[in-house]
Length: 246
Length: 335
Ligand SMILES: Nc1ncnc2c1ncn2[C@@H]1O[C@H](COP(=O)(O)OP(=O)(O)O)[C@@H](O)[C@H]1O
Ligand SMILES: [Mg+2]
Image 1: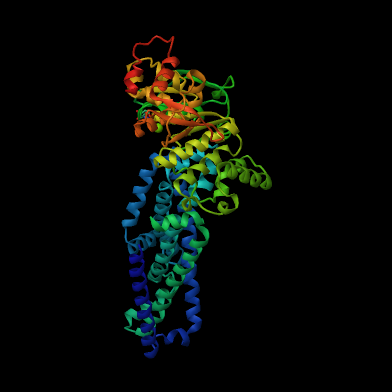
Image 2: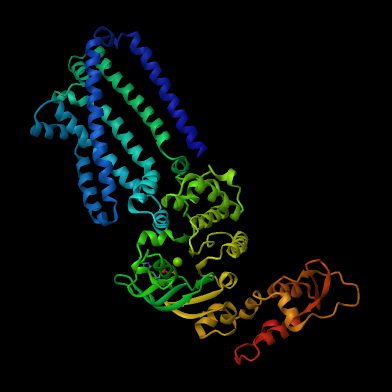
C-alpha cells in the first residue's frame, strides 16, 4: 500500500517536472505565441471548447446515472444484461466513427459534436454507476430493508452514498476524456481548440499546434483536479477510506 | 407473543426450507432457533418481518396475523440484528444507532437523548463514538452498536440472526453475558438464531431445534438436554449433554437441593469458588485440581462448605428423579 503510494507519487512528480521543462522549452521557442498575439480568437475557442464539454457531459450524467439506477432496481435486473451489452457495443465504435456517423444524421456543426461527445461519455458513467451500486454489500440492503426502510430510502441513504465514489469517478473519467476528445469537434465544424491543433498539423505550424494543444492539456489536468476535490467533498467520510483501501 | 401456525416456506423450484412449523414465543422470552447449517433457521426468522414471504400457514404477533400489517410499519416495530456488516459505513455511529427513530421522524433532541441512553446501555461512551464511523470500531464494538440500533425505537420484538457468530470465542462470551444483562432490563421478546448448542443453552429460555425445516423439539434447555425426543436431538446435543446441562445450575441450586459437604479438617490451600458459579465450571475445577473437594464462598467471601464430585452426582440424580428415562447415564458422565 505505502509502496504503491510511493510509486504513484514518484511518477506524478516526474510528470510534473517534465511538463514544466516542456513549458520552458515551448516558451523559449515562442511556440505558444498565438495565445498572446491572437487572444481574441483564443478566448472564442476556449468558450466553444468548454461549452462542448460541459453541455455534453451534463447531458450524459443526467441520462447515464438515472439509467444505471433504474437498471439496478430489482424488477429490472434482467434488463441490465441487455442494456449493458448494447452500451458496451457502443463503446467499441471509435470516436471518429461516431463523429462520422452523426455527421450523416445531423449534418455538420456544433450540435453534432455535442451529440457525439454525449454518446461517447454515456458508457463510462453508466458502467460505473451500475458497478458502484452493485458493489454495495447485500447485507447492508438487507439490514436496511429489515429495519423498515422504504425502497427510495434504501436508494438515497444506502446505495447512492456507498456507490458515490464509483459514480463520481466515472463522471470524472468521462469529463476528462471529453476535454481531449472535444478537440476532434473541429473536424465536423464544431469549433474548439481543435481549430488550431488541426490547422497547425496541416500547415506544419508548431506555434498554432501547441497553442491549441497545450490549453487542452491544462484544461484536462485542471478538470481532473477539481473533480477529485468534488469527489472528496461528496463521498461520505466513512466510505472514503474503505473505497481507497479496496 | 409470536405464534407460528403451520408455517411453511417453499422456494421456487427448491424443497421446503421451512416445513409445517408450529410454536409460540411468550412475551419476554428468548427463543433460540437452533440447528445445523441450511436447516431453515434464517428463513424462518426472516418470515417474521416479512423479508421472506409465507408460502402457507400464518405467523401472528399478539394474535394479529402479520399478513394484515403493513410491511414497513411491521419492520419498524421489530428490531433486526444480523451477523456482521450490518452497520451502514456511510453513517456515523450516532446516525446508525438512531436511524429507525429518524425514519419514524422523532425530533433531533429526542433522538440524541435516546442515543446517549443506548450507548450507556451497551457500555460505550456516547460522546467519544458519536462522530466515528463503523470501520473505526472493533468487531465486538460494531456488534454492540448493532444491538443498540435494533433497540433504538424500543420495539417489543427482536430478531437476531447469529449476532455474535463472527466474533472470536472470548469476545463472543462477553457479548452474550452483556446481552443477557441488557435483556433483564429491556425484557424483549426475542428470536435468536444459532448453530451452537452451548450458545443456545446459555441464551435460550426455550430452544427450537430444527432439521430440514421441521421442528424436532421445542423445549426449555434443561428439558431438551435431559429428555431429547429422538435420536437426532440427542446426537445434536452430543454425548456430553449432562455436562452441558450442568451449566444451567449453580452451586446455590445444589446447596438448596442436596446441601454442601463439611469443610475439610486439615488446612486447605486449593481453589475456592463463589456460590453463584455454575456446576459445569465447578466440575472442571474439581477435575483440574484432582482434589476431593472445592471450598464454596458466599457473597461475603465467607467459606460456607465444600462441593464434591459425589455431591454433583447426587444433585443430577435428584434433578432427573421421577423422570424415567433409561438413556440418562449420569454416572458415565461424571466418571
Ligand atoms: N432465496 C433462496 N432461494 C432458494 N433457496 C433458498 C433461499 N434462501 C435459502 N434457501 C435454501 O433454504 C434452506 C434453508 O436456508 P437458511 O434458512 O438460510 O438456513 P440456515 O439459516 O439454517 O443455515 C437452504 O437449503 C437454502 O439453500
Ligand atoms: Mg442462517
